[in-house]
Length: 78
Image 1 (cartoon, rainbow, N blue to C red):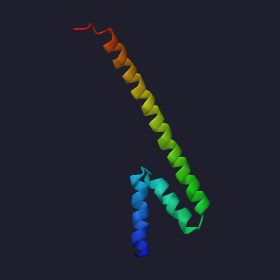
Image 2 (image 1 turned 60 degrees about the vertical axis):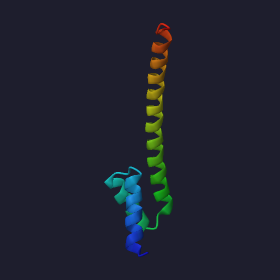
Image 3 (image 1 turned 90 degrees about the horizontal axis):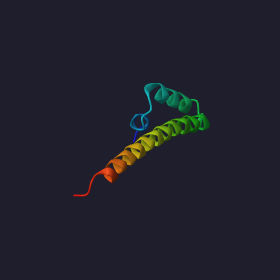
Image 4 (image 1 turned 90 degrees about the vertical axis):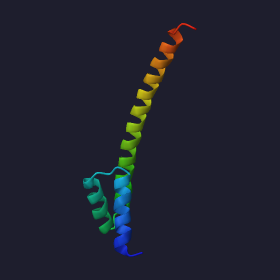
């Protein structure tokens, strides 16, 4: 595998993980500068953002589930 191929795969992986073009560019620049620690920090920040969104969505699901539960509880038995 050529270096160019591995770079393209890394960029694709970042995009698949939801990184915007600015984050991808910053990550790659840090890599070129050998700043692995900073790259890891950038990934950690992005991961935290994704996790925060996931938790917000879980709360929304909980609210919907509770509403459905309350509605079904009030439904007369047939």
